[in-house]
Length: 264
Image (cartoon, rainbow, N blue to C red; front, side, top):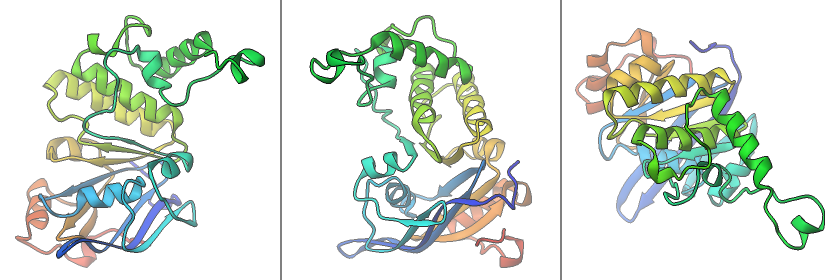
């Protein structure tokens, strides 16, 4: 369970985004604290995807502010967010199936050999990358037969593990996970849930977007409930029943302000 006095790592204030006449974000607020798993839930069309895209740099909001470690930031693309220490794992995982685990972990961030070989000839330092890839997987408890095997030989849960490990290896602040257990079986979902906890235990904040309510309540410290482009509630997971969370999410009930956590 996260510390409610821990500093805010990532915060959004009054984010707005319209697509023509459709309002995706209507002044929504968001926050995640250091070492916290924050779940984001909401019905279809609630603005979850737009919120996450804004936080990850994939979308430029029409209005509002985003703050990282107490400083206002302006992301013009996902690369800006990555440079700031925010990594995102989308549902498609963005893995290259024919490439090895090591190649996928360092895709776009390859190490080159020192000296002329790396600077002029651009020769990759494969041994270093393989060594570091093995270390990353070991630290997160991901069991793989060989880091040189192609990703296409892995199971769905193992592929998800590689995508999460890649994000955890390069994130300095936040890892955003979009439906990480979608299309996985019970056993593989359990593996991924354990992995998410280990990522948090390494000191990173985790934002979890999921429709799987049992997984949300098993993992999350707090829950951000999004409805009609705004934050409908921000609650401690232990302070709300699953049925009540769904009721707030669908608009059946309005959660009392007195029962919500203190957003800063």
